[in-house]
Amino acid sequence: MKITKKSNISEIVEKHPEAISVLFEKGIHCVGCHAAAFETLEQGLKAHGLSEEDMQKVVDELNKKIEEQEKEEKKEKEKK
Image (cartoon, rainbow, N blue to C red; front, side, top):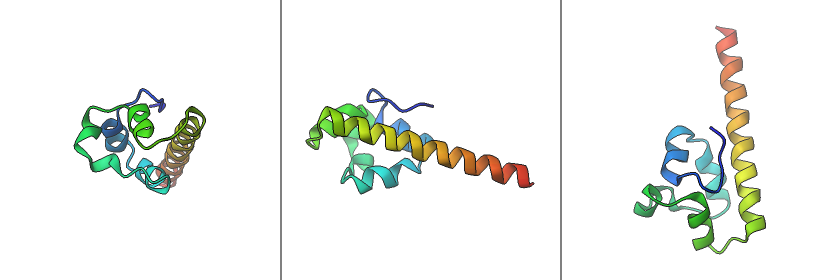
């Protein structure tokens, strides 16, 4: 699942718990907020005052973190 600004926050963290650390590092603690159930990443990041450029950086970091996690999981499966 490729993360975009239009991705739902709850769906992101449900499918990719590793994304939580990236959001927390950016001061975005809305992963447990009731609004996360219906807010897009863009809406949540805008609510925290992030610019379009900063939002794109967060999206890029999230996708990088998820890609790294998927590679790690693949390596673990290959060891078995």
